[in-house]
Amino acid sequence: MELFDTNNTVLVINQFVRIVCNMAVPTFFFVSAMLFYRSCKRKRYKEVIIAKTRSLLIPYLCWNIICFPLKEMKNVFGGGGLLHLYQKLYGIF
Image (cartoon, rainbow, N blue to C red; front, side):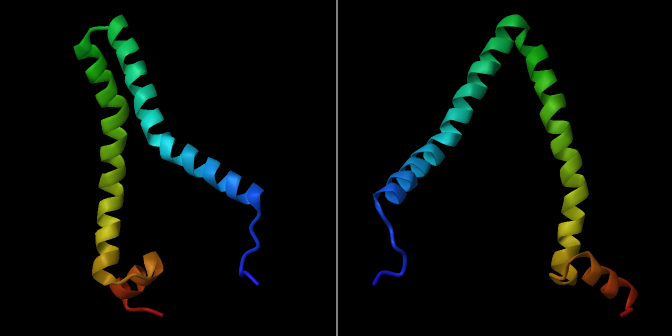
């Protein structure tokens, strides 16, 4: 007896999910490029780049400024999360 009983329906669904997942990133890049091209047609290229920088780069930098020190402290003091870090810093519990 097999460990998992599979039938044709499960195999077809599995193959469909694999195809959709393999196409997700290329489709995202294609749609993003098309929308970027459309926005460049309406505005000057420099204005589009400045707007994209504000809307993408600033949140990215803010998130990394917050998360990077926390990740490094976790790596230095051990992998127990914030409670473990608090215990190491203050020597309690």
